[in-house]
Structure formats: C-alpha cells, structure tokens
Length: 151
Image (cartoon, rainbow, N blue to C red):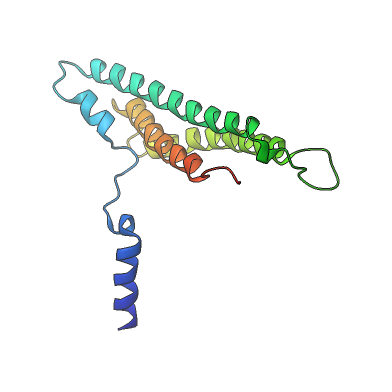
C-alpha cells in the first residue's frame, strides 16, 4: 500500500519522471532535417546548421546570466571576510569554469553516444550533433534553473 501511495504521489508531483525518455541520438531537429530530402548530405548540412544554432543559444543564455550578475547590486557583497572578492565575481568565475568543464563533458559524452553506431556509420556526425543539441537544451534549462537573482 505504501509503495502504491508513493508511486501515485511521485506521478502527481513529478509527471516528467513518468514520460518516455527520448534517446540522446534522436530528436526533432534530426527528424526534420532528414524528412523529404533527396540525399543525405542535405540532411547533414541541415543538422550541422541546427547544431551551430543550438551552441549559439547556449552561449547567449550563459552570457545573459553572466551579464545579469555584473549589473545586479545584490552581487556586490563580499564573498567572505578573508578576501575582497564579491559574491558576483566568485559566481561569475565559477559559472564560467563550470561551462568550460561542461563543454568538454558534452563533447566526450556525445562521442560515446555516437560510438554505438560506429565511426564509419553514415549517421555518425549527425548523431553527435543531435546529441549535443539535446544536451544543450538541458544545459539551458540548468542555467535557467539558477532562477532569479537574490533580493
């Protein structure tokens, strides 16, 4: 009985847990790029453009967050009593460092995902790009989950 109640509560509070998960190598961008094409190179070029657009969007969201830190007086307080750094400068440094680490992770992880089809598979590079698009979407969500700045 307790398990059923827990499951029901989980489904109500966290409906996304109950949804089917799309594999990282699949996505609407890849589907749209390969729909109704004459040759696969058109699809490859299309997904490459979507990949570039996705990377630009991650960078735009990150820059917006970093800029909002610079312009917010709430981030001018001292980070601690041992240094002259502000909470904003520490936040910026750490967020920028985490982004560099995340970029390396994304590249390596999507190479692992694409290895399932083999490097010589005709869909190898588009699979890497779709995986990175999917992970970029999640990164944007993570950055946005940082929420509004403290008041």
